[in-house]
Image (tube, rainbow, N blue to C red; front, side, top):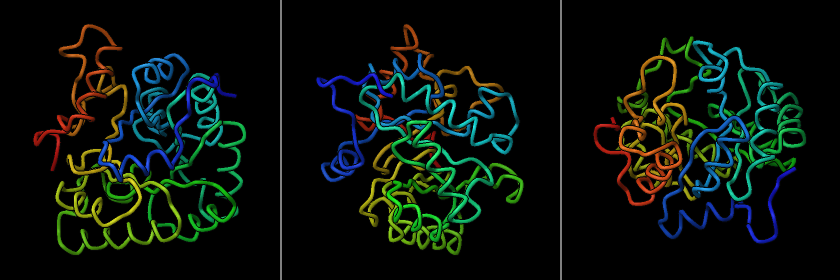
Length: 269
């Protein structure tokens, strides 16, 4: 499915784990199509997240809730056909992993049809994570702000601000790692909490609005290019502001992550 050649090595979860061990930051952006994927890959972005954020930036919805498994498979396949080096993680969308068997069926579809190397799901669903890992499906966890639960939590709010909530997130992070997940995304949590979790876990922790101490950073591509509908989140940055073109903006983001220049205090909580 990939256009990769023998001269270009496709990154694996082992490579990302090695980057954590050596202290090299992991650069990650979302992508949903072949053209942007080829650009990100050329610049050297390490990890491409085919996020259900496509529901908002591609489809025009106000949340990620309407996104379907078919939507995710279509966009993941478009990404997989164009990438050569980057590691691909694809979201399981809302209500597509309510139980282990449902999760297996949908995750297998995203890997077989969508070309995903790993699937991502929200929350400490350790029974689902453990079952998928047993079936040979790599899993990325997601804690903190959970966009698929936005209706339950009452909006897009920073999570883990009080001691009890922070401890719950730490406990859930341990459970997700113990269940066999190979990556963890932390979204919209205080920087110190994210730093503590990144230090405690052996698996790489990718932050978004979670401070600079995470093992890597991810942003929604359309946000950092300042072309998203609506306002840009505080934790994002307009990398187009000083760039010559889109490729330069992505390169500036990649270099800023690698050199610990992003995120700054103004992008953290």
